[in-house]
Length: 189
Ligand SMILES: [Mg+2]
Image (cartoon, rainbow, N blue to C red):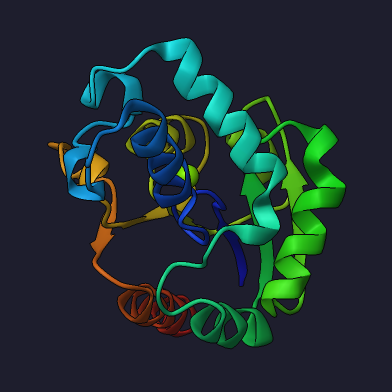
């Protein structure tokens, strides 16, 4: 089965890294749980340009960002049995930096796609059946423009959704189980 996996907030604790820098800069003590909505500057009442600057710095330091719990173990379990594409809305200029960091993290057998366009374009071109995401905005776009199923990995900023067009999971272990269930169902049909 072809599977897509988002990068920032899904594989990497990018938010934690940005938040540490912002806390140092502002002298604040915000925790990840305080990021109740997808836009850090809105959730924490910070200057948009400052946040943008720290996000940019963080992405250039991808090799220092820690992985989400369960990565690389569950990622490699999934990629050993499926065709996995990491699909990120990062600037394609960051390809080299990103690829190097992910290989260093021990992720195996995947293709990396960085796009400033729609994720659904890649999902349709690659016939991806399942996408693992932390962003409800991205999932909304994917569901609208493709037949891909979406697994939403729980983060403080994505709990505010009202439809049932996504499979919510709390951990990478649960994401792995959800993928296995979808796979079994496909084989049965
Ligand atoms: Mg993300």
